[in-house]
Image (cartoon, rainbow, N blue to C red; front, side, top):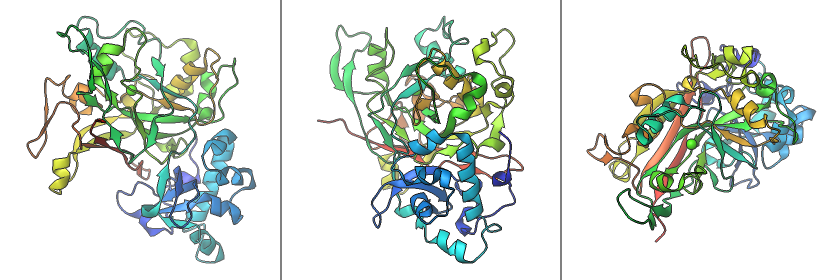
Amino acid sequence: MTLNQTHDPSRRSWVESAQAPGCDFPLQNLPYGIFRTAAQPVARPGTAIGDRVLDLAAAARAGLLPVAVAGACQQTSLNGLMALGAPAWSTLRARLSELLGSDTCPPGELRDQVEDCLAPLAEAKMHLPAQIGDYTDFYASIHHATNVGTMLRPDNPLLPNYKWVPIGYHGRGSSLVVSGTPVRRPSGQLKPADAPAPVFAPCKNLDYELELGAFVGPGSQLGSAIPIAQAAEHLFGVVLLNDWSARDIQTWEYQPLGPFLAKNFATTLSPWIVTMEALAPFRAPAFARPAGDPAPLPYLTDATDAAHGGLDLTMEVWLATAKMRAAGAAPVRLSSGNFSTMYWTLAQLLAHHASNGCNLSPGDLLGSGTVSGPAKDSRGCLLELTWRGTEPLKLPNGEERKFLADGDEVIFRAHAARPGAVRLGFGACSGLVLPAQS
Ligand code: CA
């Protein structure tokens, strides 16, 4: 994807807070979400800019947006916008950049009209950004797959299909929730290795998984594949995704058909979709396969994807325990990784998903799988960080964690930053662990 005036690092917004150091939502980001406010309780699309949200439905009604996207901007989800495709997305982004830029929208009648469509971000109640028909979770980090495999099969950590097939499973749409929604500790069948039979009890080994979630744009018809060279046009944007995982339920249930109740009790998404166009300055080469690894099969091979299919995105996990919050202590960072360490690109995941003729629809969600890098402090779940609980984490206040405790709040953050580009952030993806249902 080529850079255009919406990426120009010299441009500023007349919404002054967009220029604040460390602001996640500068003029060059323009992420999309669905929000409502107390004053206007109907859910509608918005764009975050600094500490404000631009009401896209109000802007469309005021005639400020291109006709081609005005209808999609007045729906209660972003599915309509996702269905329109990349040229329409670019048209909208260019117009929003113009309306919110200090150089392109000087003080005057037009700026006053735009200002009438702004609301404080702090007053926006966020919804899931799309009606997600189908959700698939992949396993695209070879570091994560190798670490988990080592714990389960020390002699044979990586199964022979891993370097050929982007491994995934069909997730559950009904339990996808937006950041800030509390997550209740699940109960399920637990069977310690030395016990003769399982019991039904609250999960003891509750974990998070740090992932990226990619939203599908136009999608495909049943029976038609999406060629890898066209896959990028079907990717609308990305959010942070927490694939909450009950490790003890997982251990007992996962063979032979894979994850089920250990995963589908809740999956949390950050509310703001950072578009692939906004991320254009932060593309990276696809994972450099070491000598001896097989080349991807032709349907997963594309020169542009190999050169630019990766994303240079720093992804962090933060934890605030109940005791820390009571003491007024700030959250502590548990790990920091980078999405460029993933073995498969988002385009490869999408092309693979459609390669058998499985149809993808606007608003479908593809989880990347846990983002873990080669370094120990870049491991994206507690299973890996504490090596299945054998190396507990020591928190600054003296508490220890093997897995999550009730009252723990898990917060994901991500940002993209490079010389010559304006830093973009994702906002938070957070969830507070509630005790199991009694
Ligand atoms: Ca996962």
